[in-house]
Amino acid sequence: MNDEYVKGEPYFCDVSEKICSFPYLEHDISCDNLIVGGGIDGAITAYYFAESGLDTALIDKNRLGHMCTSCATALLEYQLDEHATALKKYFSPSEVLQVYRFGLDALDMVESVIKKLGNSCHFSRRDTLIFSNALFGKWSVKKEYGFRKAGGLDVEYIDSGSNPFPFEVKSGIIAKNGGAEFNPYLFEKQLIEFIKSKIPIFENTALVKIEGGDGNFIVTTNYGVKIHCKHIICCTGYDTRDFTAREFCEKFISFTIVSQCFDRPLWASRALLQDDGSPYHYMRLSPDNRLIIGGEDVAFKHGKFDVKVADKKYAALAEFAQSLFPSIEHFEIEKKFCGAFSATGDNLSVAGQSRRDGFFYNLGYGANGIVYSFLGAQIILEQLYGKSSPLHRFFSPDRPLP
Image (cartoon, rainbow, N blue to C red; front, side):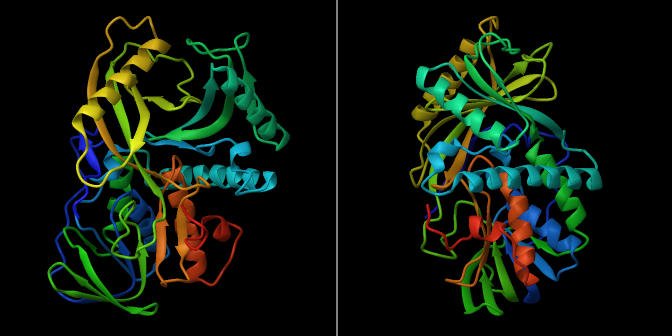
């Protein structure tokens, strides 16, 4: 089955300096750790493996960074897709706060990597705003604010009387330094530049068969060559069919448009924005003051994207943007694209070793997928070294999913 996961003109990979290309695997090799998947999840995992000096190889069936990484909007946040009250069947209140703090720790991890590699990907820490102008949404947002404030998180509540933004906000939470942004394609490029001299990378090399078990795997590729390895780390995102029949997540298609450049930022703080509607929308500004707005998710169907549905969603995003900023006389869509997006019931991603099949997984699911990929790499390294932490049970592949 050949599913189409990305469609349109992804904005972030429209740069002059591309991720360098790599050869396909032509001969049998051996390694301790085989990372399968060269998107941002795989690149983050490979970065930490390379930094730790672990014997590792990476394969990808396509080009690095050109699938779902290319259509990420890269609003990096600690808050989840749903408020704490909606997650009570999965977590206690103290566990939700723990998950929020995991997200803040991961944002620090991202910043630490940027400081080491240099900032060639337009990274910036940002405040975040989640807001609502609907009756029920106003109550829900205010309750979430009270929960975070009581839990010691650095948040501010705003309403119509204290709103600093140039659009209506009847109820909103500003999370101070609670997010970050970057160009995900250029960030992966930085990671690959660091990795490529430390571990072998092979593109256009697809996994077609796995034999053996944990500690003694034999992987056969599309060219018939074999990789002997002790551990396999699956970083293939939404498509895990080569590894397991289990469904880790529910898949959606998320739509994004990018506007023309404006002569000044549409809001002074450049905070990351998300409304509390259904469907919800999320927004950020590019370094040259373009509005990047995404959302309007629909269920993913195997096969091709529906062009008519996509066009309606792009138009809905533009209409929402103009409703927030009516002073924009001519709103132009310069880029539009859509891609697969996934969610689990508890809003967390999947990371760590599965007792069921012996594979390790680092699958960045949910709105915080990129953020959680950093935690996922940490979880895998801890498990390889025989360590344990509270992270493991929250992100375990063996927990009830999706």
